[in-house]
Amino acid sequence: MPEWLKDTIFYEIYPQSFKDTNGDGIGDLNGIIEKLDYVKSLGANALWINPCFDSPFKDAGYDVRDYKKVAPRYGTNEDLIRLFETAHAKGIRVLLDLVPGHTSDTHEWFIQSSKYEENEYSGRYVWTTNAFEGIAGHPYISGMTERYGAYMLNFFASQPALNYGWLNRTEKWMSAVDSPEARATIEALKDIMRFWLDAGCDGFRVDMADSLVKNDDEHKSATAAIWREIRDMLDKDYPEAALVSEWSNPEQAINGGGFHMDFYLDHWHNGYNTLLRDYEANEEDNSFFKAKGKGDIMRFLDDYLPKYKATKDYGYISMFTCNHDTPRPARTLSVQELKLAYAFILTMPGVPFIYYGDETGMKFLDVRSKEGGYHRTGSRTPMQWDDSKNHGFSDCEPKDLYLPVDQSENAPTVSAQENDPESLLNTVRKLTALRHQYEDLQAASSFKPLYAVKETMPFVYERGEMVCAVNPSEGGIKIRLKEFRGKEPVFVIGRAVVENEVLIIGPQSFAVFA
Ligand code: NOJ
Image (cartoon, rainbow, N blue to C red; front, side, top):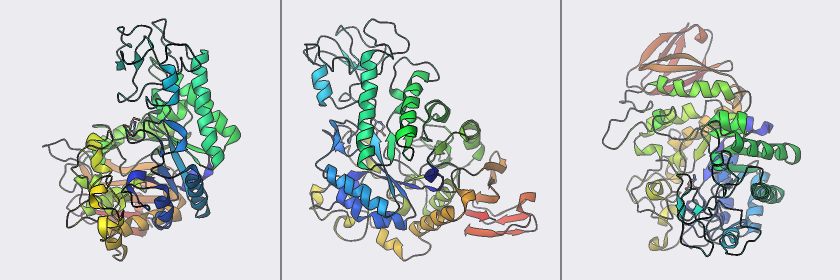
């Protein structure tokens, strides 16, 4: 387990939308390099960069055409290596995005695989022998290739599924997990990982990590076994490299697969979802951090605690403010509500991730779909740096922007918030500094709810020797807890004091006591 993860705060960068340095309307690697001091000023000490590899961009780069080549629109492999070096010199690590479950249908492997003549890549993807047969209920495409069979899709129509074999084999064309073709796919994956680790990256965020072996068992144990093998490779040859999975089942991903971290994704009505996004169109917003919502921390804890307890000795659950697939939290939360939500995320165990722009409260925009983004596109718009043209993202003509910038009068920007000590941006900075200052607030220190009652505020939790309290509601509260004895606030948003053993916490407030 890389020690550095204990005190790490990630910043996710969607490279399309962060900073354009060559005026073509789309972000680039040089833009990320230019903004590394900003990342550092935020208190983030690691990056996750969404896929930046050669691609026809039918799914924003999650449709890789060449895993070993940076997409020309972002720069070159040399630029990426310079990004690693510059980031490292500033104490920032860099994770790339690894897409192991599928490629683009324009990847050379797939072009070869779809040929009539048998070749080295015939078994690289999941194919049936017959075009009319279907693939065990999975989406597939047939009638498009000179090869006779149908091929399985892993996500969109442009993303054929790579072949890691089937655990439960019911048809002749289903490869075994230890077949030569499934083994060849695993070796190809390791080769890609070695290529970028040797070039200086610090690990990977792994896309749809649970999607490798088909007809896997309920624990996904065959898929987990592949990741365990990869973890062994890392432990042996790259012990400092880190892996975070898009799996959202930490027991399977961490205990089973050996991932260092697993994302707690926004899935409708899971614990994470009830915190910041507990709404559906035209329905009440009952998010815990909504002042007027009927927030209920037990809906979070009932889901989270068993996951935390089962995995805390093996790895970390990663909570995020948002990601490129999820509506921005500012869609429904006010600045004060965001402050409390971020304070919570940044004082919880595990390794937290901040999504670019959330630190200023960037909005979820209503824009047309771009590169397979659909509703997700609204969370992918250009970073708003300042009040200059295109909010300082790019000096291109607005019509040439990859996605439109927020045109509203009150569009939040970095520059407008820089000098206001109470701004969301500076609150995030204070929170990240606090987490770096106290080991008790970092990834590995213990976590225990001290006061958590259904539909009742506040929520009080212990981190190591410290106590955190959050009251998202509009009323002030007093509660007595012996754990407050002798404690003083070291950080407060809103109002909070302790008198003897009594916490007096104001409306919409958060505090940490030591
Ligand atoms: C999850 C990624 O986060 C998402 O953006 C992508 O569309 C799918 N996986 C397919 O790779």
